[in-house]
Length: 366
Image (cartoon, rainbow, N blue to C red; front, side, top):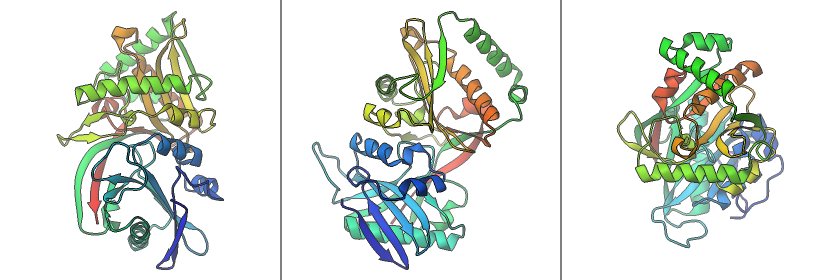
């Protein structure tokens, strides 16, 4: 798709394809002003589209003075066919953040329900004009309290797995004090095990420095295969990837929620060296990667994007997840952040580690 600009209801809607279109002038300024993380950077979105299954439609809505909203939507065909290329003629829009199941796929400046509803209508009209009437409904994910008010009718909603967030404690000691006696004891023991392990090295830094894109992609594929084979999530913290990297998650409503597949090496290369993407890597003395996490930086709410680890029976360590969690808490405190978004999956475990669970919904609209 070549960039399309549609004027409707006094708004200009620019429709772009990050997989093919050049980065529009001023995009990074819009992204940063909106507080959108590195997964919304143009080269990163492009890598995700080029290594993914479905094309991505990006809509930027503006009035005469300033940008008012951004929507990212995968354009999903009703029937996948091998070798299919281009935009589907029959399908639906799946509004979701690029490469993340934890955050909404939109940003809007207006705060009133009516203004937000007007932006949604303008986005939908422009997308229908560009893609054709065969691309009908819109699937919205990561809807929080109050979001349903600005969705158009009819809507078909259901609860999805909750989002775990960690509100920053006053100190690491305060976080420890808020844990149950058993969990606090386990965390202290984990801290000692890691400190006393002569065959373990922990480093934090940029992707490409502490861990290579190829290693992260391999770890994601390894763990995605294990998730997919089992159909449901194993809730042991040792040896499986964090759910935002792929697989199926069993959640409190009793159903299953599909997530995207493993992030490709192309995507990992796109975030390598970025100052707003942080990695933590665990290795043995031979240099073998035992586990790794990725964090998307943000001034107030960084996002824990992914975690993966080797299974214990392949040489991994059972307690690395819990050591990483403590390090994330410590990092939030040291950097003065409001908190950290911990993503979806393993909600009960994260809650036991001090997280707050935020209810989420998905809805289909026309």
